[in-house]
Length: 319
Image (cartoon, rainbow, N blue to C red; front, side, top):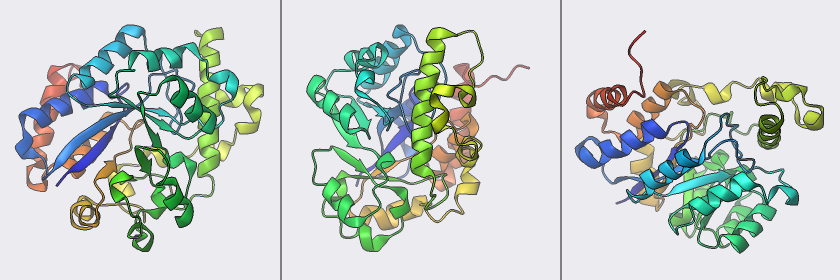
């Protein structure tokens, strides 16, 4: 039995994820049966192709190469969240994004896609990458989902509004090709989710432009006239992405660890995504403990992980 988890962020959470991978190698007894780390997903900011979650920061070439090498040398692919839904053809030749693709073009790494024009560009110019169909496409109609699964994708991430709709999930013929997002923080059946994805895509584009023109000034997306049509203050002020593990447990889309092992895996699903690219460190650690560690060993695993994070300087203990 394989229970393959895709973990959030090889950039902001590089330290946590790399230490967690080492803990998985050295202390497999702490982990639930069949647990595997299938990939670490995310982006290197300020990549304009990025979508799903807005990412601050700026990564240099040495860091990018180091991250790719660190995970790939342990057999773990990176999956680039290139899911910006508002890309235009002029954005396809972005130097920074193509540099990332070039550095990671070794046949191991993968790309998550939402934009048809970017998908076509990557298939043509970077054929070594496996391609994942993103949940950002918001495919909620069963027949359209089944159709998506017939296409040439390595994985299709199911819209999480379908998480507990078993009458739909049971009819999927190739469940091994599906990925289920288990800890969604967004309100179930949120009417603004697609608009929010477009908002994030525009914000990522605006941020990259800001860094080129005014890197020393504060960035305020709501005050950039060029992208005014994407600014929705109700969305910008949405706090769903800051929800803790204990808050999301109450959402209808939530999937518990017992659900994974007792319902979804017996049905034939094996790919599970943990979201949390923008979560604070300790919040994300709790998600890892909850989903991948044996319940009776969580305290031991949390202490071991935190001690290693302190040792590596990822958690600071001096004030």
